[in-house]
Length: 65
Image (cartoon, rainbow, N blue to C red; front, side, top):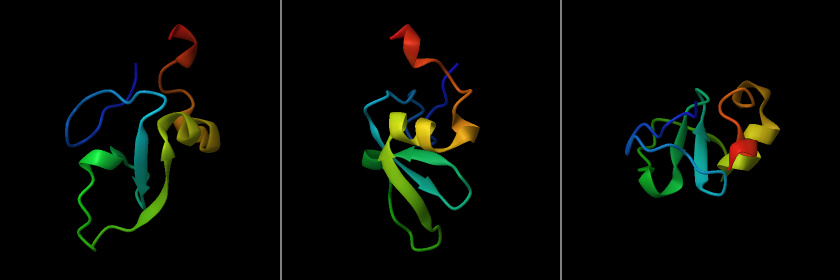
């Protein structure tokens, strides 16, 4: 089971660019609308975020692709 974007509700693909906010929520870069209230902690592809942050590693399996 993969996680979904909070805006468009689509599953993240390994190569899609995402941003991670200060609360560790991910959102597609194309869906992100800066408000100035939420700080961006990191950005990169969804695959990079899963490798970099251990709390995303158990969400879905790229080996099935």
